[in-house]
Image (cartoon, rainbow, N blue to C red; front, side, top):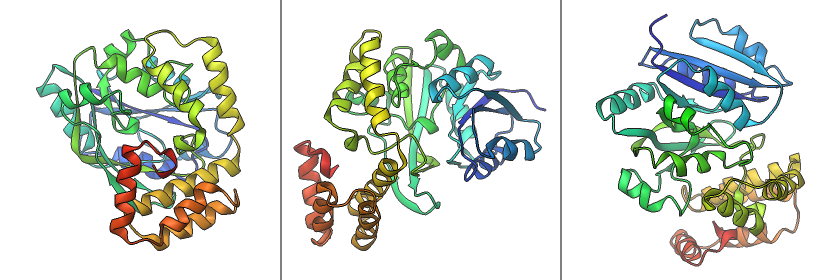
Length: 324
């Protein structure tokens, strides 16, 4: 093996349908001096069998009892051998030049401590949905806009190992937005940057813990802001309330409903195709019939594309969560 300069850190939980392609996309990188550190977070499917079936000395597998993504990442941070960590998810696709571009940039610009990139989103079957441009690319843009929304796509980030260890890793109480909390700390340690080109494809799928946060409710959104920007440790009370919300939504019908709503929105806003939007809304209705969000989006899909985009921009300005 070559010298390990970068640790590609991949948590995995029940990703048997996608992990082989994710691993192959890492192993096919133009940059070679890396280890692929996979933390199997108590998977109960064939995830571990698939990992072990791929014989490459750069793969390092650590099994642990299921403890959640933040705990899995912290396990990986403790074991990482690289000077830098490249985060990556077990259902995404890494473009061949991703590590090379990020490694060369951070070595040539040592004042930078955290990098990300634009991404291409795809559905569960790998069909491309839309191009996502980050809210900021330069250090100044990200610093000024970080309170608007999370400025980094987690699976695209590349950061210094020593700094994340210094910061204590991911907050175990920041369930579903532990990365956002970390970035608010990381930006104080040096400059940050997003490549204005996609370096990965991110898969949206109903099995993921990531769902349309607009559907989680207003209390979830307010709790998130309190916990990300409160400048105080997350309290047991806050965590308990957050877990209560997540537990009430941690069932397959909600995840399926949320997935199809999210895809339908993307076919209305980012990649306009009203027929595909309606197709996904019909799928969502199987899990939650006579839903106001479905009805509103369904009626909206019959309007001219220019009018749909106008209403969307208007709803963003007016902070209408159902339309976003």
